[in-house]
Length: 114
Length: 114
Image (cartoon, rainbow over all chains, first blue to last red; front, side, top):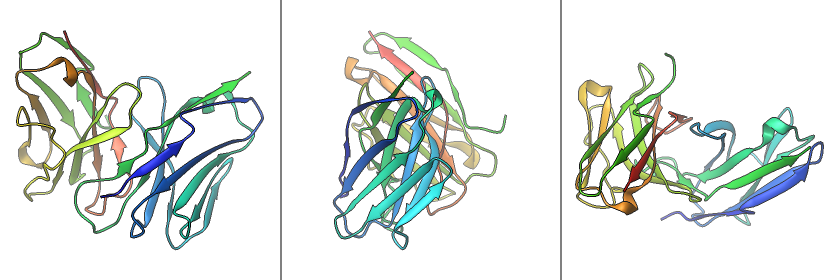
């Protein structure tokens, strides 16, 4: 089955700086890669996703890049703000590969220092 | 409400007791998932319902765990003879289609087994 590794487990950055979270996956057939943000006491919320036919996707201060050859994808947050503090999860999925949902990484606790 | 609703938000029980956790998905969503989130861990898939098809139970950790979905809407996750290692946040998610696009998560049930 799919295995998703996520790094770092904790990331602390100064407000205004950029943050980068990286994930690797094992199944080369995976073709859908979403990122979820989980704030304290809430369920995860999708913030951006990318499919394997695209190398990069951007939405305001958030961008995701995908390297299919190396089987890794990254989340980039620019001009970080206090409300970006949360736990971020990457995930990988082989569409059509079964009904067992997404394989999630273990999460990155992002701390924005004022 | 418009989101996924889970109840109770917190549940404290004694070892050996049975518990029931409830999930109300977004109206019209045909897919429903249960995940378990242990402290500092990622999201562990438990079970998946899609329409009237037989559920995918491949993630259930033991036969003490079961789930049902009545009328294609509300779902109940039951844990029998609870153990301390069952303590975790149990998250429910729903999505509109079979291809597991964008999951909408509830806020979860924090289960504590004493």
